Each structure stands twice: as C-alpha cells, then as structure tokens.
Amino acid sequence: MKKIIIAGGTGFLGVALRKHFEKQGIVVITLSRKRTLNTTYWNGKDLADWKSHLEEADVLINLAGKSVDCRYSPANKQAILSSRIDSTRVLNEAVAQCKTPPKVFLNASSATIYVHSETQWNTEENGVIGDDFSMNIAKSWEQEFFSTQPDGVRKVALRTSIVLGNDGGALPKMKLITKLGMGGKQGRGNQFVSWIHITDFCRALDFVIHGELSGPVNITAPQPLRNKEFTTQLRKSMNIPFGISQPTWLLELGAAIIGTETELLLKSRNVYPQRLVDAGFTFNYPTVERCLADLI
Image (cartoon, rainbow, N blue to C red; front, side):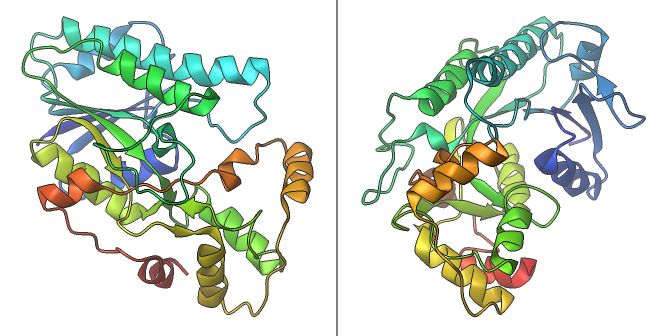
C-alpha cells in the first residue's frame, strides 16, 4: 500500500490509525471538517476538490459521524443520522466517479446494531438485529454504504465495539469514575460489554485490508464480559479496593445532568468477532485482563 484516505479521521480512532499506517511508510490523507495543517477540508456531504485524493488510493476508510455521547433530542437524533448517511453517500459518489478507485472501502458501523442480549453471542451470521433508534441508525448506515457496488472495490462495514485506549474514547472516563470510588457495577451489572484494545482495532483493520473479507465484520475482542466483571477488573488493575455501584435510577439522573444517555452503559452488547477469528486474525489482547494491564 502507498496511500490511505481516512474520512472523519481527526478523532481518537482516526489518529490511532494514522499513526499505525504512517509507521509502515504509507501516506495517510485525512478528510475533516476541522481546518488544520494536517487535514484536507470536506464538509461531509458535498463533492468538492477533496475527491481527487481518492484517485489511485489503495484504501478509503470512513469514520465520520456525530458522537452518540449526547442526549437523544430530536435535533441530536437527526444530526447523528444525517452525519453518517450524508458522509457515506458522498463517498460512494466520489468512488463511483474515480477512474482508478480505492481497492478497499471500509465504512464505520456499530456493534450496537444487535439487540440487547445477556445470553446469546451475536455473530455476523446469527446476530439478532432489532428495531430502535440506535439499531435503526446502524441499519440505515449500512444500507447506504452497500447501496452501490463499484467494480473492483471491496466493501467492509466495521461493526465496532467500545475501543479501549488512553488517548480518547471511553476508558479515560471509566478510569476517572473508578478513581473517585464510583467504579462499581452499573444497573444490574448483567449487561455484556464488548470491547477491543486500540492496538487490536488498528491491527484488525490492517488485517481486513490485506485479506478477502467483505460485508459486515464485527471488530471486537473475542471475550465480552458482564459489566460487573469488567468494573471489577478495572478496579483491580488500578489497585482501587472498592467501587460504589450505581442503580439505574441514579444513572438516569446522572445522564440527564451531564448530557448523555444510559443506553451507552446499560445496553448488553454481547458480540463475537466470528468472521475475524475464522479468517485467522489473532488478538494481541484477547482478554480484558491483558488489555487493562497494558493500558493502566
């Protein structure tokens, strides 16, 4: 590979991917709404001069989309949906106009596409996809992505779980809560947490790029665990002897105060990366114990 385009690449995941690929001597071009020296401007919905970068690129990765860490007001719901659909649509249009399009097109999706499950593993083949706001967002996102299939372009939808790293995402907030003594279980604590180490996230995308997988792929570690077990492991790794648990009513109150939704904590994401495992991908951090030992 010589050139990779990352759309919406200035966040936690995009920055990590850029570093991962630049270490290999690959040119990485970031498309972003932020106007900086290291990015190419795009507004995420209209064709413009940025599309010329896609010519003869090896890979296109789309990570664009408004954060779901907010209250689900009508305005925020619309912004969450439109930011995903518009960016995916315009990238499909740009790829279709390329004389030499990227060989691989990876588009973000979400492990939240599966229903709340406290018993069954959700794999790509047998996972149950339901009907609520978050699941419908993911379904619409993937539908837009796969609405076109240009010749010679392999498409993969990345059904990504919680990515754990120290430079962004959920883990810094989790560590702060734990340090404050509030690191007990959340709600009943039976909900599953699907997660992946940031290094394995980057390695998994690299593996997908160099392989033959297409369609939806779960980007998660192979050992999801219950919230009460996850919080116990986090406290143990941080040498915090206790953690006060938060009942659902308290989480609802706290979420309203800080402007987020309890779904991010209480939905059971019981997701297994069947297609990655079957294709031969090996995880550097297959267990949460090993993951947290590295990050903390």
